[in-house]
Structure formats: C-alpha cells, structure tokens
Image (cartoon, rainbow, N blue to C red; front, side):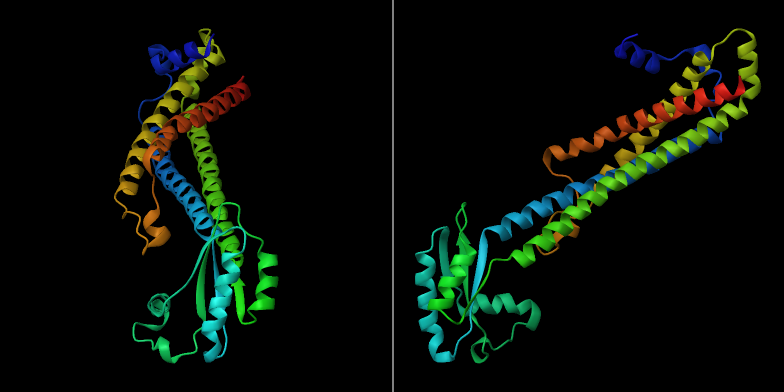
Length: 300
C-alpha cells in the first residue's frame, strides 16, 4: 500500500476497529493533555532557538565590522596622537572610515554606568576613535605594530574578546532550544506509550474476543494507532495555537530590552510552529504502533 493510502486509512479509520479503543477515559484525557502541554512548550523552545539564532547573527554582524582605538596620553599630547592615529588608519587597507568620538558621545557611552552628571572634561578619560572595516577587513596584527611605532599611547580593540563569547553563548542557547525540542518529543512518546499500554490492558478481554473471531494483531493495533494519533494531533494543535498566541502577546523587540523582548517569530518564521502538531502525530503514531505490537505480541 502506498504512503498516501496509509495516510488515508489513518484519517478515515475503521468504525468497527475503532470500537476496540474506548473513546473516553483517563487514557484519552492523558493523551490529549500531554500532547497539548508538550506542544505549548515546544513552541517556546522553538521560539528560543530561533531568537537566539537571530541574536547570534546580529551580534556577530554588529561587532565584526567595527573596532575601537583608545588613546591614553598626557593631556598635551592627546590631540597630536589622535591626529597621528587617524593618519595611520586612513592609510590602512581594509578600513572604511575612522573618526574620533566627541565629548558628547563619550559622555553618552558612560552615562548608563556613571549617570548623566559625569564631568567628562575634568577626568582623564582616553580619547576614543571609532573604526569601521570594509568587507575584507584589515590586518589587526600589522596595524598594532604601526600604531606601536607611531602612536605609543594607542590601544586597538577589535572586539574579538567581546564578540566571540557573546556569539558562543547565543549559539549554545540555540543548541539548548533544539535539545529541549528533542526532550519534549521523547517525553511525549513515553507518555503516549504508557497511555496506549494502559488502554490495551484495560481492553484485554475485548482483544481476546477479537482474536477468537479471527482478528489479526495488525487489525487491532491499527485501531489503537489511529485513535491515539488523532488524539495527539488534536491536543498538539490546541497547544500550538495557545503557544503561538502567548508568543504573539509578548512585547515587541526593543533595543533597550534586548533579548528578552526579542523572543518570538519573525515573518515566515511563524509557519514553523505549524509543523509541531504534525510532528506530534508522527511521534504518537510511532510510539503507539510500537507499544501496541509489542503488547499484543506478549499476549499471544
């Protein structure tokens, strides 16, 4: 039988075989509730994984093409060394632009840490130069050697020590989200397997009668597989809808809020959660079929 035919039989079902499985009871409620709860959690795990992926890409892009040059020199030499550093940067291949940050921007950078009343002019704060790279980038080692020779008070920070840990942390969070999805699928399979075994045990007498009248194990198992698969599909669909609604109600992405306000889906990413009910049905199909054939085989 083709795959399309098997799917059609699964959806259509057999009214006589369906009577083997009780339509209500704790196994039905357990299957629906477990599928709904796990699908709800899977939506958030998927949102976490996708959000951290965007965060890693954004951090890598923003920090990879910029550097900071810090000039620490006696007060009378700051201007001269700043001009010398700018000349070096202008003649360095791979640097698109370089500019010295004015006092106002330096104060704005320090304001979140020291407050708005910080007397920048009266403090020995280094002069900062913002360096923007081209797509090819520049030779950081060679630039440091030139600066050491021509601008002794300059220290180049290419943001590597900041970028790599941040990107690595975001990548680990993305992996954690994917791992959570696998654990959710495993927990769903375990719970549905237990529910199917309980239903088989509860209908032991009915199964014995069916065998006496010639019913094969595959016929009996098909009834359990269909009933539990459809229950898992319905429960997962409800949990997915609730999870997507909860994600939609979260605050929009805000630079001030950072990652916590960026947890969610963007554009076509909203289509990914729609796969969760289908995956839950596949997990339920495999788990129930395994449990039913194994349990029926032990009873034969």
